Amino acid sequence: MIARARHGFTLIELLIAIAIGTFVVAALYNLFTIQLKQFLYQDLQMEMHQNIRLAMDVLTRSARNAGMGTNGQVLGALGLSGNVDSSLPVIISYDGAGPFGSDAVTFVSMDPDLVMYSDADYLSDCTGTSIYFDQTIPDYDDKLAELQVGEYLMCYDGTSRADRAAYLWKVTGTVAATGEVTLDATSGLAADYSGVCASGENMPISMECSRAEIVTFYIDANDSDGVGAGSAEHPVLMMDLDYESPDDDDVPVVDHVEDVQLEYCFAGDDPCGSGSWNDSVDTYSDGDEGNDPDDVYMIRVSLVVRSSREDPRDLYSGAPLAIANNSGSGADDHYYRQVLSSEVSVRNMRALQW
Image (tube, rainbow, N blue to C red; front, side, top):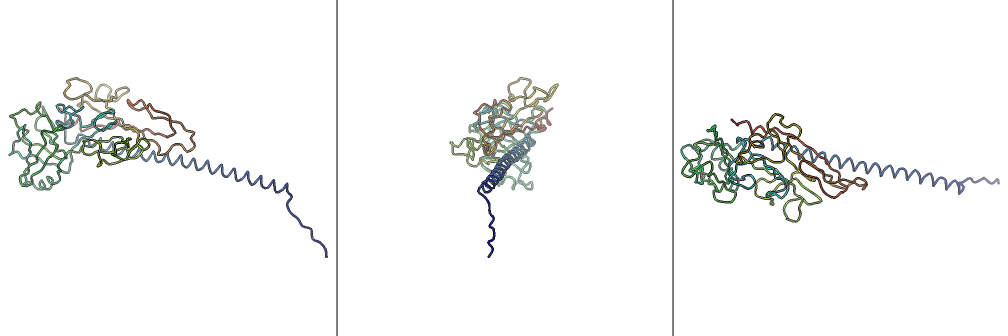
């Protein structure tokens, strides 16, 4: 019998094969790791894009509606800076103050679906607490039924060129049989109309009225108050619909919104040019020319969003961004951030000025 030769791998060949295999596996693992981190980075970027575009769309849509049913100002409740004797512009900016405890913005307009005209047969006294609507007009009974206690009724007097005014009252009840809407005239948020409607006089004969849409957007980054969905690690853009203060019925709008800023520009020789944007607007009662609400030409809304997670590589180092009058001071971290600004023409604040 002839012995057959047996062939195999030598130890050196095995070591070389293992080394080559290890190198290939390590290269593939490294490539996979790089691709995974790049995927996570792109995912965070896309998430921020979506969040900031959605938040800006919601804010600018409310801004374009602001002032509808007014001449750009409102008398009564919500008086600017807490002063109920002052009328307020229909777009209010809160610079880290006010009932919401953060930078916030309030937009005021009239609900176009519930417009009614007050009954000219009932002249409401300036010190009274009721407004009447003619129940013989179709749909008025249904519209009155839509008004809820605690909401605000806005009425616009368009009969006088000299002193067009929109009034704002808090609703305390409705009487369907008579078309009566009772109003809160005594609470801390109630109107003080002594400057425009003296005792012994009557409110305008017929006013265009509807439910007031008062929408406030603010940042909730506080989880210690037990209200809202936000925290320092998870800031949320919230929407408040009753203008009281943050409470359990506020609606979370967009996650991971870190800052919202509002700036005004006013009509002039170079409206909205370089250096003409302002962080605040004067009250109607201060008597000064310049940053008057009647002269608001445009507003600029700016948002900062940040990623939901920090940089997975821990290589990126960032900090809160400076926009408008926010200095952006804060400790460095590994969150990505994006800024988006949009300028909106506020036509409803100027269209009815004479």
